[in-house]
Image (cartoon, rainbow over all chains, first blue to last red; front, side, top):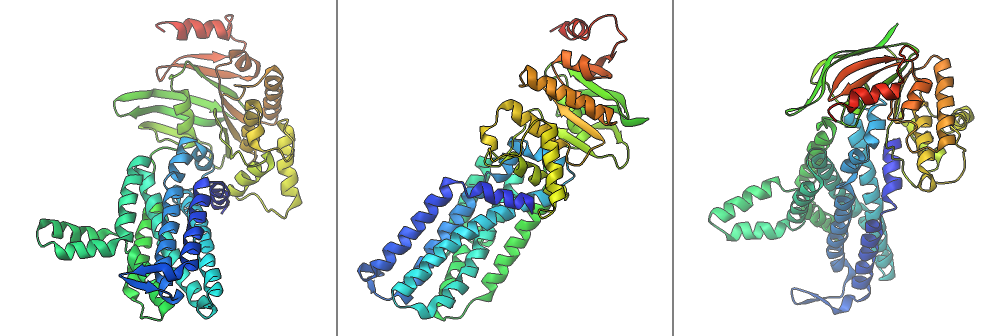
Length: 251
Length: 229
C-alpha cells in the first residue's frame, strides 16, 4: 500500500497529467457549449444525448493516453534510481512490488479520467440533461476497465523491455485498440494477405473502442455487449499475471 | 560465531566474471571492510549478500532470522518528501508502522536524531548530499537490523559529517551489530573496521586485520591494488 501511495504522490506532480486532463476538459467544454455547430456524417448534432458517446470516446482515449504516459517509465525509473534496492532488500516480493506500482498508476489515471467524466456530468446539467447523470457515472466504469488494460499491459511489458520498446509497442496497441472499428472495416475491405494479417492483429488487440461503445450504449439506453466486458476483464487478468510473474533478474 | 559465509561465490555477466570464486566469513559483531578499486566486485558482492543479484556459482549463507539494513552508495529518495515521510514510507514497507501510534513516530524520530537529522518540514530536494547519506543510514536502521551493509557511508560528507557517522558506527558496533562497509576512504576503514578483504578483478588478493600489520592500510592498498593499474 505504501508503494502505491508513493506512486500516486509522485505521479500527481507530473505536468503531463495536468496538461492532458485540462485538454480533455477543454475539449468537453468546447463540444458541449458549441453543440449546434457540430456535424457528424452530415447531420447536425444539437442533442447532448447524441453527443455524449462521442465525448465518452474522447475522454476514454485521453484517460488511456495518461495511463500509458505515466505507466511506461514507472518500473524502469525504480530500477534506474535503484529505489528497487531498498525495496527488494526489505524482502518485498517482486510481484507485489510491480503490482503496487501498477496500482498507483491506475489510481492516478482513474482520478484523471474521473475528473473528465465529472466535466461531462457538469455539462450534462448545464445542457439540461441532469436525468442522464446516473448513466454517465455508470459509463465511467468502462473507463476504469479501459485504463486498467493500458496500465497493466504497459507495466507488464516495462518489466521485461526497455522504455522505448515498451512505448512503441503500447502506442501501437493503444492506437489499434482505440481505433479498432476502423481496422475492422479495413480488414473486411481487404481480401488478400493484408486483410488476413489485420484480422490476426485484431485478435490480440484490446477492444478499447468496444469499451467506449458500450459506455455510449449505456448512456443512450442501447443494449450492452457483455462479451466486450468479459474479454476486457480477461485482458486485465492476463496482463495482471504478467505484472505479478514477470521477473527482473537483478534489482 | 559465523554470521555470513560466502563459499566459492562467482558472478558472471555473460562472459564477464565480476566476482571470481570468492570465499569469506564475517563473524557476529564484526565490522568488516570490502576494499578495492572501482570494478573490483565489491558492490556486486554486496548485492549478492542482499539478494539483489543471484550468484552464478557458490553459496551465500546468512544466519537464520538475521535482519539486514542497507544503505546504498547513491541513495534516491522522493524529493517531495520530508525525512520523516521517507522513514514512514520504508517503515510502512516493512510493516513496522502504525500511523496512529505515537511510539512508532517517536522511534523513527529517534533514528533521525541518531543520524544527526531533524524531523522538520524541509523536503529531501533541499537536502545536501551528506544529509541524504545520513537519511540513507537512518532508513537502514528501521528494522533494528542485526547486519548493516553500508556502501560508501562517508562518501560526500564533510569532515564533521564523517566524524559524526563514524561515531554512530562505533555506537552501533558497541550494540553488537555486524557491519559490512564498502568504502574508498581508507582512514575511515582503519578507524572503524576490525577486518577486511582487498579485492581486485573480482578476487580476494589479500586480507587485512586492524592493528596486525606494520604497514598502514593505505600503503598496503596502494601496493596491492596499484600494481598493474
